[in-house]
Image 1: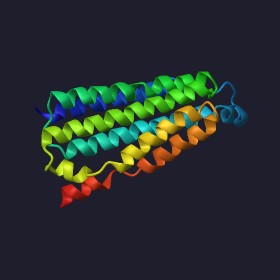
Image 2: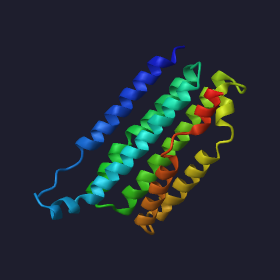
Image 3: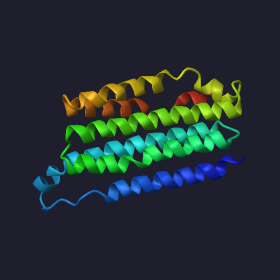
Length: 191
C-alpha cells in the first residue's frame, strides 16, 4: 500500500485542525495594549496548541519518511491519532471560554495524553509492517522520551484540579522537550 496518500490525507486533517484553532480565537474588544494583553492567555494557549500539533505533524512526517510500507493497521492507527489531534481546537476553545478553569485544563492534558498514546500505537503499527529489523525500528529503539511524556501528561491531569498553572507548565515543558525533531530517524537514514 502506498504511504503517500495517507500522508497527504494526514497533512490535510492537521492543516484543518490548525485553521480551526486560529478561527476560534476572538479579536480583542478594544484597540489598545490593555485589551490585547487581556487576551494574552488565549493567545498563549493557541501558541502552545499550535506547537503541539506541529510537533505531532513533524514527527509524523519523520516516521513516515523512515517507513517503506503501510497496511490496514497503520491506517487505523493513523486515524486514531488524527482523531485526538483534531480535538485540540475543542479543548483550547473550552479553556478560553472557561477562563482556564481546572476541568478544561485537565481535558487538554487528556487530549495530549491520548494523542501521545495514539502516536505510540501508530509508531508500533509502522514498525510491525516494516519489520523489527527495519531502518525505522532501529531508529526508534527504546521510546523513553514518549513514555516519559505520557507519564508527565498523566500527572498533569489531576494536578490541574489542584493548580492549573502547574499543569500548564508541564504541557509547556513537554512541548519544549519535543520541539527539536527526533534526530534518531534522521541519523539512521543518513547512515
